[in-house]
Length: 131
Image (cartoon, rainbow, N blue to C red; front, side, top):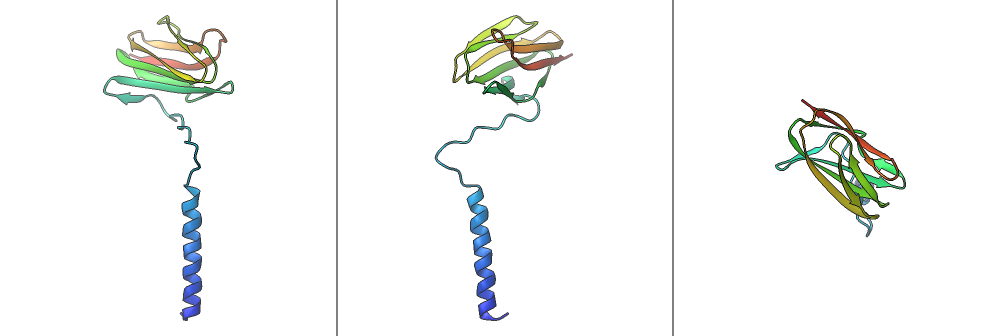
């Protein structure tokens, strides 16, 4: 290759690399974490089921599966105030607008249970407890 052609190839390669590296660069605002595409996250303390409610839409899986007798933490981040209610376990916790609330329980009752906003009736997800 001639020196001129070589410089042209290198210039093109550098331009492509710079363009690709710019794709990953973020602005000053932190990116929202993506909802978990699968089931709950398992930690040493049990399963964490997390969803986000933004603009009336629930971001996260519509069905979460856990094992019977597993400790479960339901974590809801919401842009509206309401009350989280886990049916079948009759557990509730308020969530303020722009905040995150957590509700913990031991999944001792097998079955499928709705987890919803109590006041608005908005279904957040169904919790499947496998025996």
